[in-house]
Length: 215
Image (cartoon, rainbow, N blue to C red; front, side):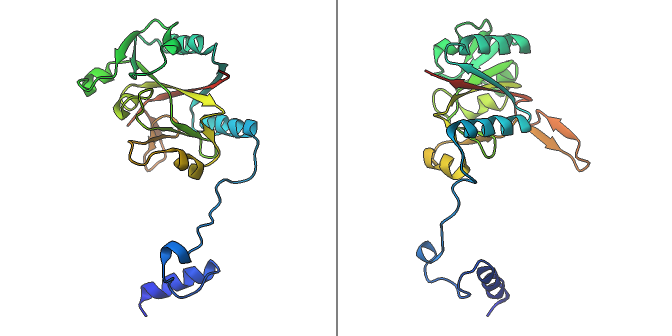
């Protein structure tokens, strides 16, 4: 018996399983993982999402479908945005009140051109409450990954409660693993060995999340 076998046997014993290696990993190992931690109502799940987004230093806003165009207009104005990247199928009414020049997501756009854009507005595929995470999958209302990585200001619209789930396992059930998934937990940030936090290193410095209800 190798050292590896001994270690794995101890792990299996600690987990309450048989010491010997299973005959078939697909059937002999318990896959009954927790799908979420605790029991929450829909409203509590949305509240948890908002709390964890804010904990990651995202700026959270709430509005109704009717109020959304004015909220987007206000956020762009407060940021001083003169231009905004627009995914190909972003609902037109979201930006109907906004003044900035619209830059459409094109394959010919260079990183330098995207870096000159002030903001980007997208939808999302799903939002995970327990981790405060937004997931984009490159759908037409979200655009390609790079338009949410280069501009310094990202406004992401989440439809609640339809696009909100409690946990990562529940999110994975809704996602297509063959799509380009971008998992966003707060604005881009990193820390050096002395834990000095720097934001905007490999993505937007400012992430604003609009939780939209109704409609």
